[in-house]
Amino acid sequence: MIRIYNTLSKRKEEFIPLEEGKVRMYVCGPTVYNLIHIGNARPMIFFDTVRRYFEYRGYEVNFVSNFTDVDDKIIKKAIEEGVPAEEISQRYIAECKKDMEGMNIRPATTHPLATQEIDGMLDMISTLVEKGYAYEVNGTVYYRTRRFADYGKLSHKNLDELQGGNRALLVSGEDEKEDPLDFVLWKPKKEGEPYWTSPWSDGRPGWHIECSVMSKKYLGEQIDIHGGGEDLIFPHHENEIAQSEACSGKEFVRYWMHNAFLNIDNHKMSKSLGNFFTVREISEKYDLQVLRFFMLSAHYRSPLNFSADLMESSKNALERILTAADNLHFIAEHAVRGTLNEEESAKLEEAGKFVAQFEAAMDDDFNTADAIAAVFDLVKYANTNASEDSGSLFASSLLAELQRLCDILGIITERKEELLDEEIENLIAERTAARKAKNFARADEIRAQLLEKGIILEDTREGVKWKRA
Ligand code: AMP
Ligand code: ZN
Picture 1 (cartoon, rainbow, N blue to C red):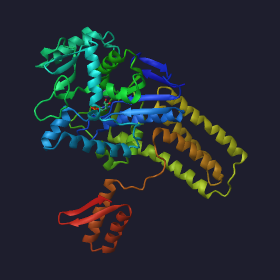
Picture 2 (cartoon, rainbow, N blue to C red):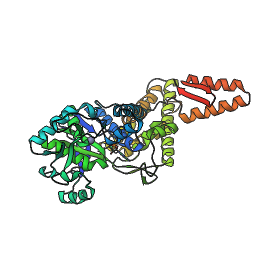
Picture 3 (cartoon, helix red, strand yellow):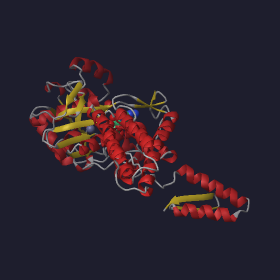
Picture 4 (tube, rainbow, N blue to C red):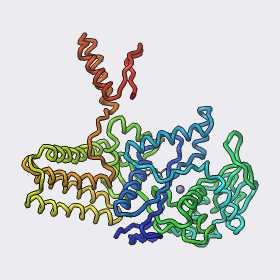
């Protein structure tokens, strides 16, 4: 039985799917105006792991995660660069997908784009207007928040508290709203912005309506799980509930899941503080598996602190798993005996307890920290019990068990041959030094070694440039 902490009820609940054997899951994706940062990577890695675990448990998972490709920040960047907004979003979607691949995050079943779903948004907004949940003023459509009786049920706030908070946020031009709590569903374009025609104005949708519409289109009016970072609880997810439930008259989501934040050196990560890392920057120094492992080493509802020390210990911990896998692989290949002896059969049966331990941890609200502890118990067991005298079936069975558990966490136990940027730079520096010392044989050797790994060098007047083939 899988138990999930539901933000809605503030307790762990048994997971009962809407449809037997199936999971319908939606996770809010990034706004694509820049390379993703390591904070964005936390929900991506975690929910990919949730999906993998459900699949391991035999569920068919329909997993939808959007890209928000129309937004003020994208438009601002497009204006700065003097290119169409679409060029910016397409570029960063492609970059995001590269980072996802590096972190071994599987593509979702569907990655819808907000700009491709405008018709659905126009439909939902029209329904809300017809039902009296929305109204238009000067081309802007607002949601009539107080009409929705359950507003605040997810963030556990009452309307008057919210109103107090919102009043402080009131910005000019918003005095046309009936109520400070009302939020935007559709807004008219400003000069030079991308727009779509609508019954209300040439304009574009608000952010919240996107997810209600994409979730409905690809998963149906009711879904099992909706996830994202905890900053999205209010107002984004609260507003999604208001839109979807007012429209369908049904409960929108059964289980709301939210990951806690990733901080850097115990400070909130922010661009203005300059304590900010993109996933791409991390990939120059580490295999992104290390980042994945690091993220899963804490429970998703605990804040996680990113630091160089913690990355180093994650790297070492991961290395222990890879070494154990290497050893098992070596024994399986070189063992004299193929079959299991009696002692080995008993030991394999005993090793089954690590699988049970792993499953119990994951069943308990996806406790990846405890699941990793189970993997290490298995590693320790393999290290003490498999040796040169073991049979190949014993070693390969332990290896298969280790790989199965690691695969649920998205950890690949085979070593990658690929060189990191830093390793490449070091080899190039060594080659330059060799050439200066007129050791051309060594310099050529390094060039050949890099080429074998798909790295092409180009000697230019400004120095050596390199690229991946
Ligand atoms: P955004 O592009 O800001 O809409 O964020 C995309 C996803 O990343 C959302 O689910 C956010 O909650 C999540 N997120 C952003 N910053 C962090 C962070 N520092 N730690 C954890 N999750 C984050
Ligand atoms: Zn969303």
